[in-house]
Amino acid sequence: LAGYSQTHPAWWTAAVQLAVLGGIAIMIYGVNVQALPTHSGKKWRYPQLVALQVGVGIVGAWMLAFGYGNRIDGWIQLGNLLAFTGAALFLTNLMMLFMQPGERPPRIPWNERTHHQKVDRLAIPFTMISGLVVVLGTGLGVALDYWKPAQGRWDLVWAHLMLLGFFFAMASGTSYHMLGRWANREYTSLRLVQVHVFAFLL
Image (cartoon, rainbow, N blue to C red; front, side, top):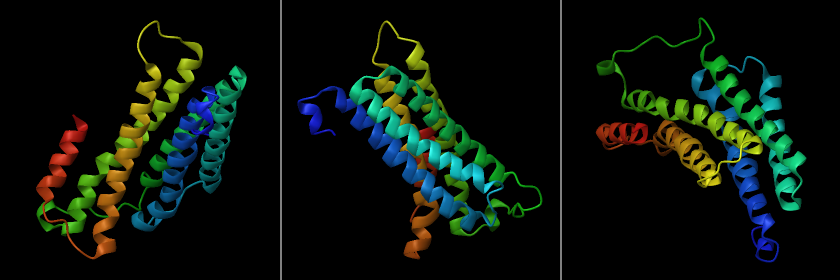
């Protein structure tokens, strides 16, 4: 689609929407569907809502791509609403998974935690940020269907939220949770992980 946009410029936005919402977002949803229950020791409370989250996300991404490519406002608006619905379900499913009563692991003092447990604790803010920002980003997409700012490139604000706030935060948190275990090695410096968290929050 990006190549096609050289002769049909409208398809550039379609390609970006499909790559971010149909590629990156759906991959993150899929990784979380598989990994979070395994690593948390909990089950999705409503698997049907998880399936709906992924389904509306996929349909929304393709509707946006088709709508932007063919300049059909109704498809764009519905696609943005579906993408936002998927993001809201993503955050809701995460909250319901981790807030299940009676299944939380016992709190371990910092000085008694293993290296991986300390890294896990530091990685939690990345997951929280990611879940919140994807709702903000897709919500901005819905807002821009009805509100046309007089100044500024708000499409770039959307891209910044989705790529840096959603994708990079989730990739960072997931990497910290899993890579050390997969490699059977410890991160050399917990302090650098703390600096990364602090810098990202800023």
